[in-house]
Length: 251
Ligand SMILES: [Zn+2]
Image (tube, rainbow, N blue to C red; front, side, top):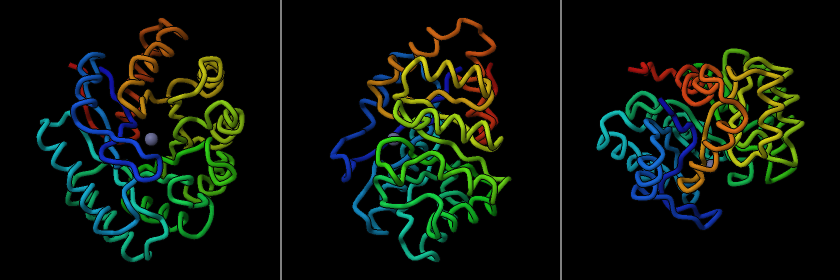
C-alpha cells in the first residue's frame, strides 16, 4: 500500500498553481498510489473561500470511496473563534484527518500566538498538524516547531518538506529533539533523506509528493535509499496510517 500524505486541490493564489482532480488521479493511478491526504491549495484569505475549498475536497473524498482523506488549511490570522469553528466543522462534519499551516503562504510564525492557538485545538480534537518548512525563512525555520512540540506533547507535528535542502539539518535536529515531530521529505535531496532515516528511523518519516507529477520522483528516492521492504512499507504507508489514524489495513 502507498499513502501520499501531502497532496493539494484547487487553485493556489500564493504560488499561482493549479492542482485538480485529473492530474491527481492520473499520476496517482500511474504510480499505484492507493490513498492520498488532500489539502487545499491556498485560496484567497476569506472564510467563505476557505469553506468552499474544504467543501470541494469533501466532495472529492466522497466521490472516490475512501481513496482520499481531507486535510484542513485555514488562515491562522482569521479571528480565533472563526478559525476554531471551521476546523471543528472540517474534522467532525467533513471527516478530515488533520490541519495544515503554511508559514510562507499564511504569513504565520509557527511559534507565535495565532499558531499556538491552532495546536491547542489540535490537542482537543486529537489531530496532527502539518507545517510547511524550508522555503520562506525565517518563519519556515523548522526549529520554531521545537517549542510548540514541547508545549503540546500529545500533538503530532509533521514538518512538510523536512526543511528542504537548506534547512534539513535543522528539521532533523527538531525531530531528534522531540519524539512528536515527524518528517515529510517531499522535495528533500536523497542524501538528507538517508540521514533522516538513519537518525530518527522510518517510523517518523512519511512518503509525500506535494504535487502530482512529483509522485514518481519521490518514490524513486525511497526505493533508491533502501530495498528493505519493511523499512519501505513503514515510510510509504504505515507512518501516515498511524499519524492520521486512518485505520487502513493492507489487504
Ligand atoms: Zn504543499
